[in-house]
Structure formats: structure tokens, C-alpha cells
Length: 286
Ligand SMILES: C[S@@+](CC[C@H](N)C(=O)[O-])C[C@H]1O[C@@H](n2cnc3c(N)ncnc32)[C@H](O)[C@@H]1O
Image (cartoon, rainbow, N blue to C red; front, side):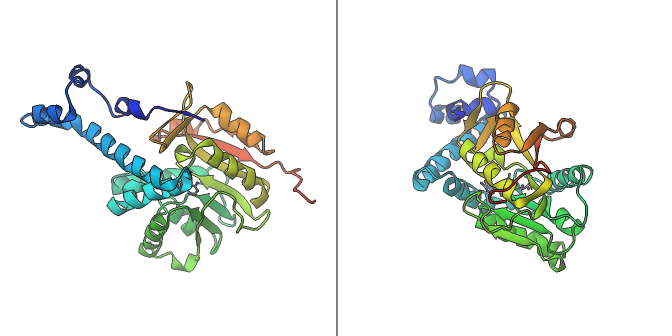
């Protein structure tokens, strides 16, 4: 299990040397100290955001009784209520469009064809999904997500882009077992910024069920937060993995996995791995 660096959260939010020097002060004293000084107040804003998230996440984890999916569903409910685009990681419309386009053009230039059937795991509010839906034949896009709130936002995006005729499948799930999907159906699967929010057991569950739904020779592309140091998580929301760990998890399920190094040159903080189902893969019972 990646270790918890939640209490070091300030280092992820840009602690300045000055604020470290004042760390002997209570939060209230720091606030009172900063009030007449807008620049100092601005420096405290990330700390306040982190503290708010810490408190909220502690509350949500308490109610989830150790079930990560239930916890993360609560995180999404709270984030979607504020702003669905920000809930999938892009606070501005411009960035939402850009990250969707990045995913779409990359997959198109790495194998996607209009006749393919695509499974998107953690489809969010269709940031990339609406572009896939537009490009693929009707009914060939299957998006799934654990959050009912983000799926409702996805339906609004679908309608606003006028893509109703494409009849995509948008499904709420409770786990990564993919039980509702047929064997050998998909040419490819895609998960962007989902494993970056997933503990190892969720990733393992997903990788163990993906081979059943892929066609032989089909592949699964997923992004993740890369670390070359110790694996860790922040607030149980953001998880950091070494590429070798994820490659080994995929290989353990009979997938051929490799890092997609050209993705790293694009303007995005996460890295990408492609896990391919060998053409000679033999399914249980065959
Ligand atoms: C950062 S958002 C990215 C959404 C979308 N992939 C995109 O790029 O716009 C992560 C999404 O994954 C969903 N998610 C998180 N864990 C999941 C899981 N185990 N199974 C399915 N969806 C999950 C969240 O509800 C959220 O919609």
C-alpha cells in the first residue's frame, strides 16, 4: 500500500520558506497576522484549501467504512456540486476542452478507428468522451463511472453537444468487475486520470477483469501519477505509483504492458501505460 503523505500535504501546495518560519503560530494567529496583508493571505489560501479537503475527506472516509469506491463517490458528489469540470480536474472550460482533445487525438493517432468499440473506465463528464462518441459509430462507446453525479453531468454534456443519436452507453458501477459487459467485445479500453485516484486493490481488480472484455489484440490505455521514488498517496485521493509496479500488475493478468513514452512529451502531468491482450490469449473455459 502506498504510504500516506497527507500530513505533508502543504508540500504539495507550495509551502514558502516564510510560512515555514511562522509554523510555530496557530492557524488563527496566522490568519490574524495575514489579514491586513493581501499577499500573505494569498499564500495561506492553498493551506486553507488543503485543510478543508482534509476535514471533508476525513468525514467521508468515516462514512465509507474502508470502502474506497464509496469514499471516492462522496468526493465526487462534493466536487461535482461545486463544478463538474473542476471535479474531473480542469477548473476552466478552456483546459477541460484541451485535456479532452489531448486524449482524443492521442488515441486516434495510436489506433482508434470509427468502427471500433471503446470502453472508457471513469468517463467523468465526457471531457474526452463526447469526442469519442462523436467519432465512433452509434452505440460503440461505453462509458462507466462510480459517480451518479458525474454521470448526470455527462448526460448534460452529451445533450449540449447534440450527440443523442449516437446512443452511447453510460453506466453507473460499484466496482471494477465489468460484470455487465460481454466477453471479447471491445477493441480498446481507456482510463484517464482514474488510477491516479485509485489504491492498488482497485487497480488490480480492474486489470484482472479487463482481459475478459477485450478482443484478442485489444488494448487498455491508462494514465497514472508517476513517481520514481517511494509510492505514496495524499488524502487517499491522489495515488503515486512506480511504472514497474503497474506493469507487473498488468503482466500478472496475462497482459503485455509498456509505458507510452511519447505521451510524456505532451502537456499533461500524468504518464500512460498500454496493456495489450495477446492475440493468442486463452480465456477460461476455451
Ligand atoms: C479525474 S476524473 C477523469 C474523468 C475522465 N476520465 C476525464 O478524463 O475527463 C476521474 C473519474 O473517474 C471516476 N472514478 C474514480 N474511481 C473509479 C473507479 N474505480 N471506477 C470507475 N470510475 C472511477 C470518478 O468518478 C471520476 O469521474
